[in-house]
Length: 372
Ligand SMILES: [Mn+2]
Image (cartoon, rainbow, N blue to C red; front, top):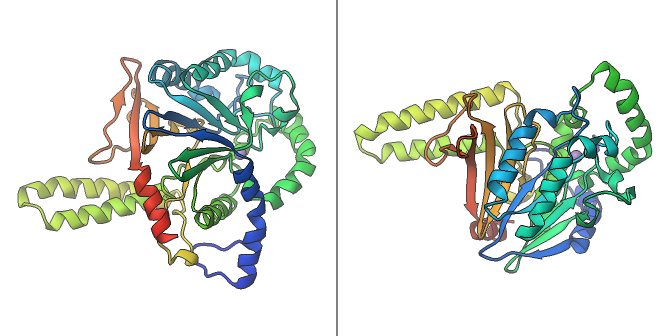
């Protein structure tokens, strides 16, 4: 690792200097970003990390392809959403663009249809940055490195996220030919999967942490992908469950006896889910000594579409931002939270959407300005 601060650590002067240098790259992303203005009627779907392949055994996109096609064509398109594909859409480390676009040509037609609703923008990630050299690429005119959504005087910056580790990335671009060769011709035949999530959790956390410091410093919200870990208001699932439990414990003492069993039941469910998270070693959200460990809601992550059970995504609708999860309802979802997390089935498709978290952008930015 490259000496990044971890949870709760205080910063020395040299660390601060290091962070400022590190952020030069992110600052240029902010400067050069494609500008989009939001208003009350704006609807934007943000997806990342599809990792589309050739449709074969090693194509991680394959398992959720039907689900994704259905929700794009039968929900987001008719609901007038614009689309941002936030990086690593094609898995070019393992497959050729030709094989990907011929296997998944329906998806390219579908993506392009979103222009009718407003726009289609596509940022590139580390697994699909080779698209910059492809003259014939179907989504060429939508390809950018970053996008800034203007919400009144505030900015939400969308980029893939790999840019936060220039160190790692510079090394990677030198190595990438060798890496690509290894993955296409050596690893593939023996069936090594999930290279895309092979980053260890410490490295992922370092990337998130770096973007977190940059966003707080610049007083903007960053929306990323890359780490495959959904984040809402800089909080991971573990943090969120902790907050919910705390909230319910508080409610418990102030309500009539007959309502208490339900709260008790919900707390038990949340605790079980929390235990499961700890067993899987899921690290918690972003904190730093710089902000007295108060979580600042400056980083959001759409997660990915290659999860075993589901697809996660971010939605912006007017002044609301949401983290949603789509899953095949025939398989019982592992966890349904209390209160506002009721799944809604999309017609009779068998696919359901559940809102994992939702907040107003005004709250997000007030908290950012008050605390950062
Ligand atoms: Mn990536």
